Image (cartoon, rainbow, N blue to C red; front, top):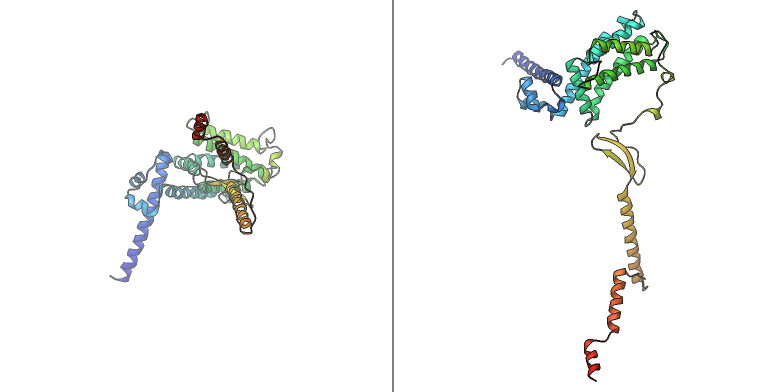
Length: 321
């Protein structure tokens, strides 16, 4: 076979492999849009992608690793779309109110789309056993927040922190509606949700009548002591006699405590040291004073009392005489 055909064959193999990966990723997004994360099996993924289950296992060791890859790809795509829709160069001349409307409308429509909503639900569930699965979602929210700050920082009086808080309110409301089967009067993706969140963000940033809703909490960033810590994937710094506390459900370290086993080992070493001192005292001709136990003392007292009493034969001889 000529070199030209051999080279073409290798390219076709890579393209076929990439095509299968794309098909598997798309299949995962379609399944997450219809079903719960825990109800999806590897066999179902293979059927949806139109390939064998061996093909799935050739690329992913288990379902969690597969879904982590699918979710990461979904949020990367959402981030790219946000950068296009909220490009500062395209909205630079727009008013602050129009920019707020664009931010809210884009966030609601993108996050509540069936496949994106399925990815968000799967992310929050998967993060309970794999905290790193939450990072793509956090990166997406950070990207949208940074775009909002770039667009609004020079158009409103509120500091950048107020913009970040407002975007956090928007994302929290959308996420809550996605997770709830019956979210209430404001359904996920509805026109009412877009209108309500737009009014909330306009009011918070001082772009509606009545002034800003943001108080003193928007004047500065959160202090370290105000930030809630839910655990870390690296153990804390430990001093002598301490061990780290690991939460198996969250797969994180949540604190530290005294090492009770080390205390027990120290007590055992102390007992062994006393025994060794007693042996040394015996070898040097000293008589160690050993305090008898209660059982030994009781046994000794019973033995002495039996020795004081006359035997049965002695009592018979006394009667005969």
